[in-house]
Image (cartoon, rainbow, N blue to C red; front, side, top):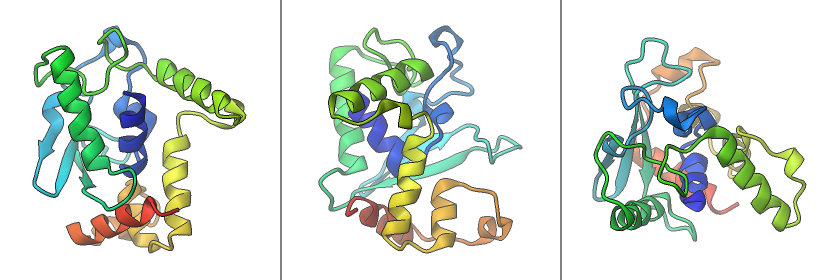
Length: 184
């Protein structure tokens, strides 16, 4: 589960609050990411966020996760996660997409604590990481991969330099960017 969340969060430039909840009992399928918010296509998956920080009118935002030719492919990871999850406990479209070991909605602090434990076991200082680390890592990798600024802003849904919100980015450009991320 943790690997899937990290992969999807990284390739989707996601904010921690877009895939976690503060408390499991506060999960709201009309707001939070659900199983039914995944749309599978032949070459990509679309995650439909019902709300986001840069979506003040709550129209929803789609995050594309393409099949990429890297060691870690967000498409394959999410497909496998859904298969394993369904085999362990059948779910409804309104159930949370990401869950903890007890099948409750993934809580922010649980996720962050798990990440810090893994990082510590790997010899990294866990104090250097937080809920924004996946987004920061994706942006840093994008910079190292020399992905164009406007595309990084689109991938990360950043509202600064608002002209970037008007640029139409093709699916193939987003696939190229995600393919490049895994190479650094």
